[in-house]
Amino acid sequence: MKRYEALAHEISQSILDGVLLPGDRLPSVRQASSSREVSPSTVFQAYYLLEAQGLIVARERSGYYVAASARQLPPEPETMSLPDQDSVQPDTSERVFEVLETTMTRDVVPLGSAFPSPLLFPMKRLARMMSVSVQNLDPWSSVDDLTPGNARLRRQIALRYLIDGLHIHTDDIVVTNGALEALNLCLMAVTRPGDAVLVESPTFYAALQSIERNGLRAIEVPTHPREGIDLAAMERALERYQPAACWLMTNFQNPLGSLMSDEKKQALVKLLARYQVPLIEDDVYGELYFGDRRPTPAKAFDTEGLVMHCSSFSKCLAPGYRVGWTAPGRFARAVARHKLTTTLTTSAPVQGALALYLEKGGYDRHLRQLRQALAAQQVVFMEAVARHFPQGTRVTRPKGGYFLWLELPDGVDALRVHKHALSQGISVAPGPIFSAQPAFGNCLRLNYGHLWDARVEAALATLGRIVAGEMTRQTMQP
Ligand SMILES: Cc1ncc(COP(=O)(O)O)c(C=O)c1O
Image 1 (cartoon, rainbow, N blue to C red):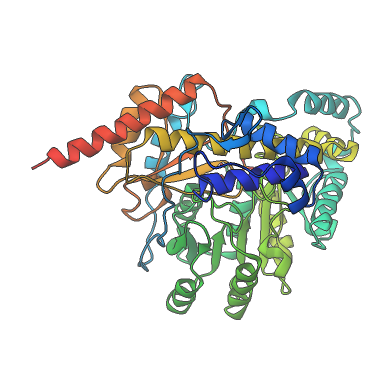
Image 2 (cartoon, rainbow, N blue to C red):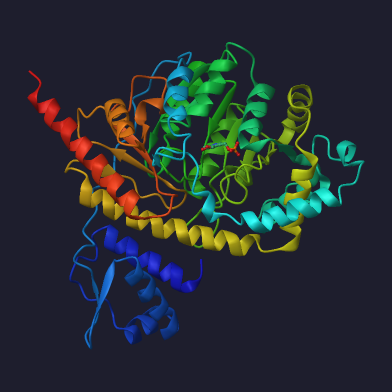
């Protein structure tokens, strides 16, 4: 983030948290510039940005004030998600497919979608790289780029790890068809049917589907909406179930948006190393941070090669190109073998195009714009939830990514809300698809990665009315 963006974000957070209230006067540009040790133009830019977001207003010859409409937001969900549970063989795939099918059409307002707006990505520049890649394709690339993948692309990925302080050798990276394939291959490499796998609760539904497909058992570990998985509960589960793997997200977890601190990541890696349990780390949203640096993956604390780091370009650069990767530590050979016997390799021209894009530069500029757009969208969405949803609704405040997790007032049935919303042309992701247990029945995941316009505002207003209607129905039941 640029300085003025960081300043604007800090102030917007204070407004959203209720530290700054509607009508409060912001420090003058001169005061803010001297107290924060930034130039007056940085403060001006930050204030202009906040004004454009509708969070502050300028009063002539008097300065800037928190806007009357910038109300305090609904409270965050505070509690850990679930008590300790038994292991289960997930049976959620059908339900997930039913819900997801409904989001795969352009006609609905895609609040339930897992993807941000395609308009946020440099599609034209990528298309040029694709064209150059195809025209200059070395006929031998069909051999050279076989798994573990295009060496230039793997080198660029290794360089990005290096920027973030991780020393990952090019040879230890396996290119895959998106992060989902990376995650699946890692799971296959370290488990056998019947094994137990630790996951968060709630968790990314594809983890449950993958566990189901491989004949494994899921152990859902309670997870805090801000701080991530509960390590004490995880230790109890390690003792009790002797799991073969742990699959989780340390940065901007889907669906909660939780972010583990570095200390917690270090403790997590140490704990799993004590039990010699491999960690499959899903880090697809790590680049979409709103703070001043990329949050470290748990992989950074791994000294035994037990962490299998998985990510992709799908959420931050090239949706639809289906290029991801894994740095699976001591399991690199096993993962590459599984890839060779399943999908063999990843498309050579597409690997070449992404390698070229990364070599030419511009990725970081694109990421800065994307993060700024998402951070601004989050504020506007939260404001709209505050305006339109009934009292008793709780909302997370993620520090990155593009999902909000809503806890609706007790008794509201998220699956009924999903059905009703769909009949009005709006998709949402209901809580029950994120667990193999009968849990999160009153929760929703909302995607704020689509550009704000009157249609989205109207959709949130409708959704708020549907939730309020569900509350009334609930109280009228005998
Ligand atoms: C948490 C999480 N992991 C992995 C994926 C899959 O990523 P990719 O599209 O790169 O396969 C997704 C996509 O929705 C996701 O939300």
